[in-house]
Amino acid sequence: MPDPKNNNKNNSSNKPFAVVTGASTGIGYELAKQFAQNGFDLLIVSDSSRIKDAEQSLSSTGVTVRSEEADLATYEGVEQLYGAIEESGRPIDAIAINAGVGVSGDFARDTDLDDELNLIQLNVVSPVHLSKRILPYMLDRGQGRILFTSSIAGTMPAPFEAVYGASKAFLTSFAQAIRNELKDTKITITTLMPGATETNFFHRAGMEDTAVGSSEKDDAAEVARQGYEALMAGKDHVVAGSFKNKVQAAAGHVLPDPLVANMHRKQTEPGSATR
Image (tube, rainbow, N blue to C red; front, side, top):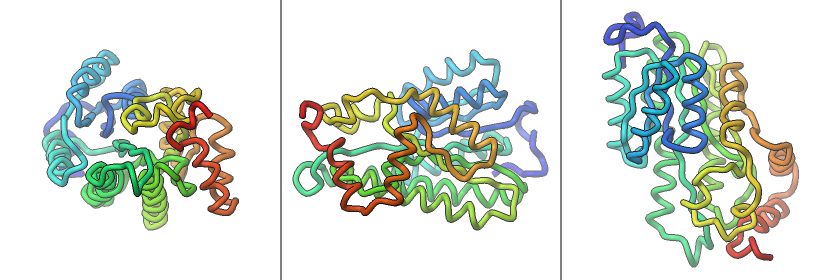
């Protein structure tokens, strides 16, 4: 990592610096836009070539934007990103660990094992790997902010998204645990917990024939704004989007698991869009 005592070793910019993963579209792109509009230079990352389009668009805000195409579902991809951070020579003021993927369907009958394992690599292993690389540097520097994009699905059993929901439960627990470990430092950890949001997530997860996939969804820009503001305020988490999301998250914490699992099933079971 860059020497924390030599903040401008390879870059003359005095702007704060943020890294955003999964930034080519959706919540990740909107988070990057929030950082850019608030004067942060950026390193944005995605496994898609569309990250170059995002770089061009965000550069119009007047900040310096660099993009990196890397598959964070692989060990090599995370190390590639870490290498790009080192190469920048910039101290990281904030990182939004946002990249994630969903898989939908009957776990025992329909979903593909490789898809489920890829989900675990991206949603679980990658955030742990990246955090392990970034946090020691932030501790040496004495400051930093990390935003994890989780989901309200992580507050309850998630039938027909069984591995996705479990991955987000892991991520929420992990974020809260390391936040507590760092409570006597100037490093803050914030968890962004959106509900159904208007992104490409439901198409990629094969959920277009589900009740939640066909329903009205929250605006990604508004979710990102709430996440950015919570991060800057040092909050431990924010349930973003509609009031309905807050109700669902609260239900996930207080109602019996079999009941909330059945509630979730009605939203995510294949074919539920037409029932």
